[in-house]
Image 1 (cartoon, rainbow, N blue to C red):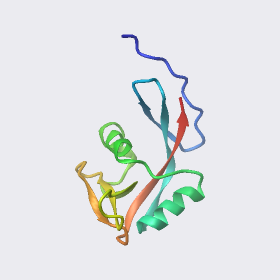
Image 2 (cartoon, rainbow, N blue to C red):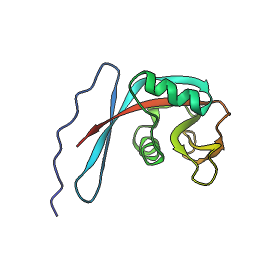
Image 3 (spheres, rainbow, N blue to C red):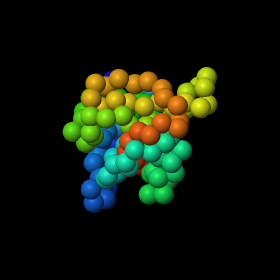
Length: 121
């Protein structure tokens, strides 16, 4: 099987290319980490912050990719994902960048956030 070749997206000042998520059918997206952390805020405010800079919070798979390949881009702290818990809409998933641990927390808790942008492949 030949690996597909994809053109790299252009980066804006301060952005970091993180990789790509590619589905078996060849669809997917590049992930670009946007500059700057959002200080501790609840989940809804963190989601709004990311939207305000034309980004989104990363999903759980993207956060695991960041922990594996780009841990120096994050403080060793808790960061919100964009994923709410399927069985409890008052909770959302987070990643602890000190250990790689992922779990859920009540959305009112104040954690850090980092925005990403996705570029279709």
